[in-house]
Amino acid sequence: MAMKEIAASVDEYIVGFPEEVQIILQKIRTSIVSGRHDINESISYGMPAYKLKGKPLVYFAGYKNHIGFYATPSGHEEFEKELAVYKRGKGSVQFPLNKPIPFKLIERMVKFRIEEVLGGKE
Image (cartoon, rainbow, N blue to C red; front, side, top):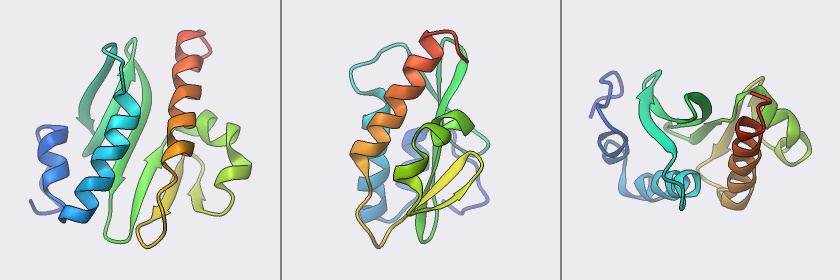
C-alpha cells in the first residue's frame, strides 16, 4: 500500500509495511487490546486508533525509520523521564526501528491511559 493511501482497517494498515515492521506493529497492537474487549479499534488520522468508552486512548503509526506512538499529552507527561531518551513532541514519541522497541513501557502507557479514561479524568 502506498503511504498516501488510507487503510480501511488496522490489518490492512499493518500489511502495508515490510515484514519486520509488521511484527513490531502487531506487537504494539496486541499490547493495546490484550484481553480487553471494550477497546474499539479503527483507523483515524490515517493510523491505528484506539478508543475506550468513546474517548481516545492511544494511536500508533509506522514510518520509514521509527514507530510513532501517541498517548495524548497526559500519557506522555506521566512517563516523561522514561521517554526522555526518545525524540518527542507534545503528544508523541518516536521509537527508532534500529533500536529495541520498549514494549513494556508501551504497555504501561496504555494501562495509564485506560485508568485515566475509566477514572473519568479524560
